Image (cartoon, rainbow, N blue to C red; front, top):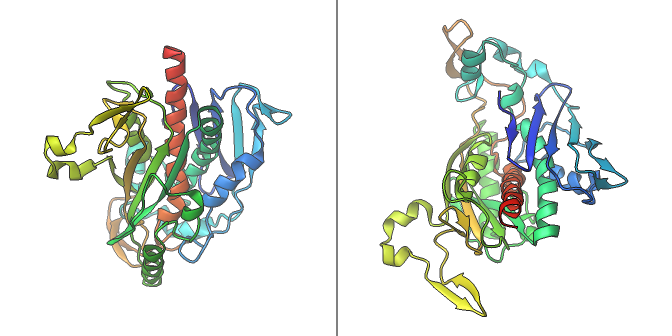
Length: 359
């Protein structure tokens, strides 16, 4: 089972949703980077469950421990291992799922592939696996910020049919964190929160779109064929639980334009090249062009709903299942730091690869 992501900056996540804990090993982090748990914990706090009325009621502090790879508050250049203990696991809430597959979850496909599965909360297929990604992403964000002047950010753009108006060139982290749904458009955020809470009370779930951005990315990151920067971002985002679609720049709306309308005209000022528009989303030919990188990721409604549904059991016989347990009515607010983390992991890996090849 592949649990490793990246080339020069590599991460390997480990652990199950209701096991002893979850974590990550980061390999390829440059030495002498100032790093303590205080650099990691704020990102995990943004991801953790139990934040508000529109997230799962599972109460986990998600306190991180750095087990290796640092000395006297600095990285050694050796593998960094980080661990978060599972403290509020309730496997009994999943007892019925031992025999029955939850519709649209990984239960059936995992069992069909491996012939065994951890039915307690989904095991490795649980979104709790993303703790390792967010912890590693905190390191990647620190490297990007301090070594390259690059900022990564994400926010909720749309919940079902409610869409916010956000300028990717101006939005700030403070605006993103100003409300529990993490939408910088306050009017839209209020409507989103009301919708999610209403859906939660109905025992149902809802999906939407998160927009991710990276500002300050220099020209030249990425490669022109298989490891296009946009392709690696797409893989990173689509590896997250509950994702259903990815688009960058003008995305699917580009088909509504002609070539003349869609082309980003080049201009130069003081020997620096820029574009008049940014339909490319900051990437051309798989390589960053210096403009703001922006993309959107669609998340489906969470698969676990509090209503009886048709399913099959481990003997492949038809049956019914009414899910229990603690689940997010909408994954979007907690997925924001996940999107930021995966963006940072892709960018820092390409930054190191670019430096290794091009100096």
